[in-house]
Amino acid sequence: MKITYIHHSSFLVELDSVNLLFDYYRGDIPIMDLEKPLIVFASHVHGDHFSKKIFELANSHKRIQYVLSNDIDEKKIPVNCKDKVLFVGAGEYFDGRVFTNKQFFQNIEKKESIIAVETLQSTDEGVAFWIICEGKTIYHAGDLHFWFWRGEAQSWNQEMERRYCKEIDKLNGRHADIAFLVLDPRQGDDFYLGINEFVKRVEIDYIIPMHCWGEYSIIQKMKSHSCADAYKDRIAVIRREGETLEWNS
Image (cartoon, rainbow, N blue to C red):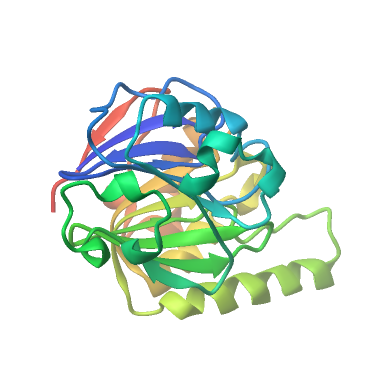
């Protein structure tokens, strides 16, 4: 599995038979095999997770399928892409049989075999994605995170914690090969809370921080935090856009 960090929360995951692009809005997308199926995910409408630029990919990738959170306005979809978009909400489970682009399945006999997706409710907007593809389990949090802010009232933060834990409790006891998790330096000393709560519930082989706003030093800060002693070696280090991470189970 080849993983390329593009920008912010956007990554390209290249598997043997399909490529997955997450939350693209800015940055250089790596050159891809145009004949290889491409699934483009957008977790929600926020400008740092979604851009109409993703629809330009349909001009060169005929075997493309968009999986978009249903908070994204259908009016944003170009006419030539309307038959390639699947809108999803939280709490859904689906596989490739519901994909809308018929060209996507060229030479693929079993539509259900290529991918399975489960969505979770974000604590901000949209959804998070729990994906099984080629026997690998991939989680992309979107903005599902423990958004603890010291400037907010205690009751607000307690409600945020309740909502976050309620949602990730649905994954309790599961295993993920890779998980893209929010690590936001704007949270100050509370930066570690979201990842740490998630790791308490889910066994993760490879933790990939995202949403760092270009402050990659926060990753080393996470690895050095006492809470991460048991899993610090499983946290990927990202230093720049375009960096490639290779992962093999």
